[in-house]
Image (tube, rainbow, N blue to C red; front, side, top):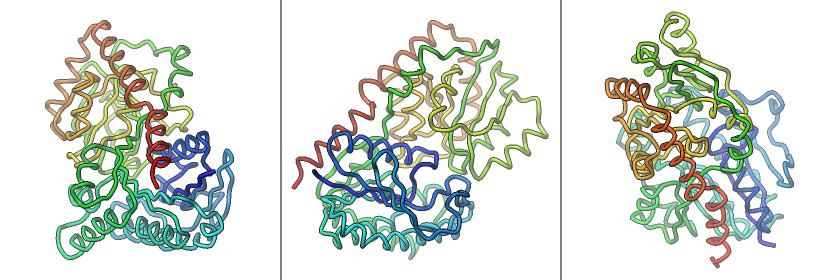
Length: 399
């Protein structure tokens, strides 16, 4: 039996795209005959506070669905400021090293490290060498480039050091996997020895199981949903401030947690007649039934991030929700290529308002055609089972 250890800062019971992808990757590899273990941080995302059941612990071991999970403490933070976030990343990159003895006993064939944080990949590379395994670096975002694009870091000495570390890790890892074609191209240009396009994708079965039972809530207005992180990069607070959905014959329903949630609550309390409704976040298993009640979804980014394809695009496709996307880059290309929705420039609120007004007047037949395109793309191209099959074959045919 082949063995793999996944090292990640993010893992269930946290909610989020990396968490779901890594958990389902672990289950998928296990189903294909792999022995899988996970090294993860104490759950704290997106609140920035360690969950109650894990407080006060330096380390602990769990078993979920036959997968051993070894957890280590960290300095938890969801601050908008860069320094606390950097300290959080560095803290877990250090404490994860305490798993060295356990990895030596497991004796894995591969150690797969999720990046960012970039420094965790350095820890993963060291741990792989320590236990005689090959190191796989899974790149979800190109750091430090994405941090620079979001204004979290400026170019200079620290940026140059991080860029050097990034390329060093690509070269020294046995192989690198990327979440988008843009990332894979960058990996190859930076000297990665082997690469694989391993998209977030979506577990279409989770959506198929509830599809026939979901009933849309009758409404005279176009019902738009956003379900995800309420962070700076998504800019949901600015969407609330800039767009009056009620005037456009629409409603926006928001589900999620994150750094902007309290500001959104305060803003909506003072601006009650904009057709915007903030709900509690929903658990992972409830996401399909929740978002499938709506007509379309909004997937915003405040600016294009090279290599980023938000996982909400894939979930929206699986739900049959036409997408209003404002992120540019490869995500925009995929939506246009598969006729799964509409693309606006990031933060172009006039264009977004015009698009919403136009969608509100579309016939059900027109919307149904786009919904069918979405489900077809999710099932036949971005199906996570197909993605895991590709990873399994990639790893099995290596060495």
